[in-house]
Length: 509
Image (cartoon, rainbow, N blue to C red; front, side, top):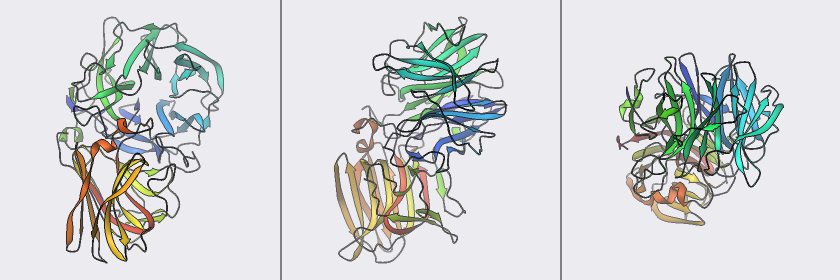
């Protein structure tokens, strides 16, 4: 059956997958966004529905004052004996931890801390019931993969850690997972960094402790030498077998905006069929390569995945709770994001700017999932001063964002277009609008630029644009791992948003 990649477009990095019966479950990284660790379910591996989040209560994990692209890294999801386990890393304060739940829907436990360094923890339950934890490790000179025996209920390390592999020679061996097949233990890791040298390598041994031999075809998946491929940076994978005995791999990758190696959508989740050679080593994708259109023995026919539309949605903010598809920065503070009983989303700004590092502004956003789309909102906002503003934003992080917003200038209500790139922030355009009335704001996105439009009463038009390259990962000053979010925000005052929507107008992007 044919299907399309990515299976989770936009910012959905570091996928990990498991299966229970005929249902697949997937977790992805969330970094400094809240709620954290998005969780997905699917019956056919290509049509995914958000099931919730592993970190959804403020008391579970404190992400306030977390830097951009820090926070929650690379969860691994596994199921054992009717319980779900997620091992993850909070890179700045908490370190490695495990959370558990009786169902993917939760409730997820408070974190059980693991007194073990490294990142990318992955649980492996052997047939005899022994639980192993592998992580990346480094002593400052040598990097590798360390293995321990762990009590997942308490986090206690029972044996190890022992370095079991230093990879195949690529930098930063990380993202380890162990599997058992035909009596042998297979170790899948990422090497080369999560940029354009990314690759997946495989090793196997008769014991989980090694010694491990390398697959003669390593790397089993990499696009580092295929600059023509529209998918780049592939790596950080996880294997799963379906109920029919077929094997699959999920991994991350990016889609550059063009011939230049810049990407703005973030690291996305891709799917590849896996077969096993006569020598017992895995064969991934199309001779170790992924494509936007692929074919494999899916567990069920693709439905939404084959429609050619990615990321279409509409939210009228009519329910008692905000949809879990929306994310906030670091936390969702009481009284800042509220659903009105009469309908609408009320954002109450306390003076916190989108440009303030490690802050928690009145902001909700969703990942941009297609190159060419139209993002809209309508809202009512009466700014009391020049410090009051609310509007719409294309947001990468606190140093890279474009926004159109309603504010007040010399007593008049106006709409400004502002750009923040690196350490430069400037208003690029200002238009006057009626003193009263609902405001409609639009962002048209493309591989070249973000164009901003407005309408209010009889006034309407284009505000201006910002280049897409300004919101691309490769141009940021910090090591960053996220993608553009399309969002709504309020800095000071109270803004009532009536609806918001996004439509993919590219269809083939």
